[in-house]
Amino acid sequence: MSTNGTTNPTASENSASAQGVFLALKLEVRPCLSHILGCVELLKAEIKRLGIEELASDLQKIESATHTFYSSFEHLIDANGNPAPGADARTVRHELRTPVGHMVGYGEILLEELTDHDGTAALQSDLERMLKSARQLLAIVNDSLDFSSNGDRSLPEESQQTSSLSLAAELSPLTEAEILVVDDNEANRDLLARYLSSHGLVVTQVANGKLALEKMEGANFDLVLLDIMMPEMDGYQVLEYMKNDESLRHIPVIMISAINELENVVSCIGMGATDYLTKPFNPVLLHARVQSSLERKKWRDQEQHYLQQLEIEQAKSETLLLNILPAPIANRLKRKQGVIADNFEEATVLFADVISFTTTSSRLAPSTLVKSLNILFSTFDSIADEYGLEKIKTIGDAYMAACGIPIPREDHAQAVVEAALDMLDETERIASKLVHPFKIRIGISSGPVTAGVIGKKKFCYDLWGDTVNTASRMSGIGETPHVRITESTFQYAKDHFKLSAPELFEVKGKGNMASFVVLGRKED
Image 1 (cartoon, rainbow, N blue to C red):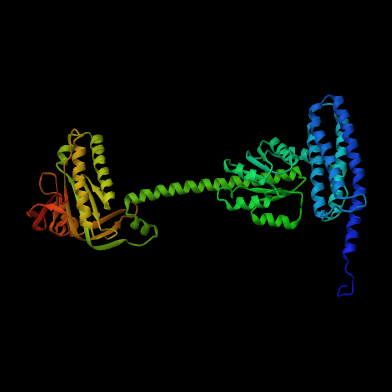
Image 2: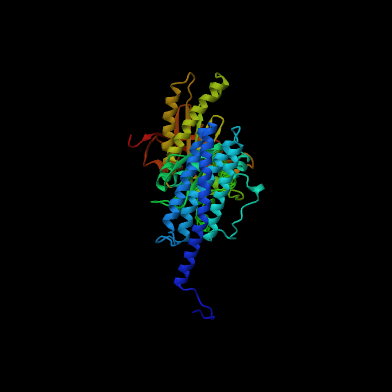
């Protein structure tokens, strides 16, 4: 008894009500089935008479679906209207909608095929009557089991009973794509595959979720049509797996089920499905949703392509920028920092100068000269990278590098002298292969420097200060290949290298200065 004075229905009353619904359903279904089977017999005889036996297979599938419906119906509901154990309204309508969907689907395909044959007007008329009964049967199942929201079993006006498949055939072709159809019912797969293939799509069929995931591993599908209720691995599990897999999550998925309940739709969309369709499918609606899903996939793929191209171009720009500026300075510049200028108390600067370059260059063709210098300075670039030096620039026939900027390091002088010795050796190796070989002098000095970026369009990271000028002067002393260091660098390098006795030279703007020639590494 309810608290408001009304009486709630008891379990026995609910059972009686359900029994009444199933009994009424049984009484309404039988005439439709009898009419469908009668039409099938007439159609079989007419097809044989006209000699178009190639259409008999679809008619056989309609007959098979009708017998499947009848068998399921008799199994689920006994003669007194009692449902089989565990067969509630939801189970009954799911089991019955599948075969009736096959009747309608293959009937529409057959009707479409008949338009290509002359003298089949009577056959088409019989087939349309059969389709009318099949649609009536579907309406009875839907409405009696509360599947439809409005309970209206009336059929459309005659003018509206044009085959949905015929209407779909007039729609624009679908975007070329590869589709995976996943359904444990062979007839469902066949209907979907035949419709989609007729619109130019490449269709792969599988019978369960596990096979679907296996197929996806080595293929590149543009869309998956996924049944919900399947043994072993249902559609929900397949969808969840796909959306958690980075390589599969971008593939659109249209869920297909004989159960058209809001909670199922919400659940699928919430899990990441692109759309939801009910069986038996409406070809026009299927066409629209497949096209929509493929368009989304197309735009997503284009977006990913553009993003990849953008990343490639950004990487090129980044590489070009790093060829001009040290990475820390480039990052500061990208953050739109103002004037970039830093003072470093301890750094070491190297200048490598080609001896008698003017005389040598006058004897070489421009292309030969540039090629030779490029080989030499590219080798110096590799050596600078190996020892952690920062290439500053080339100035005609001179190569400038430094260490301890823009990131300070304690062994800046040792690293520069090590690199200088390798540069001297590599120059000798390269010179042995040239008709007019180069010889170089390298000057090195250590001390404070100022570093910064100059220019607005053609950026340049440069160094200033007495240390820079002194290193440049050291590279201009003498006429023989050598690595010459100042006394400031000597204090850093004396424990690691063999050095000559100090030599005094007149240095422009500096007067007499002591310098040392690096004879080699101490371990050598």
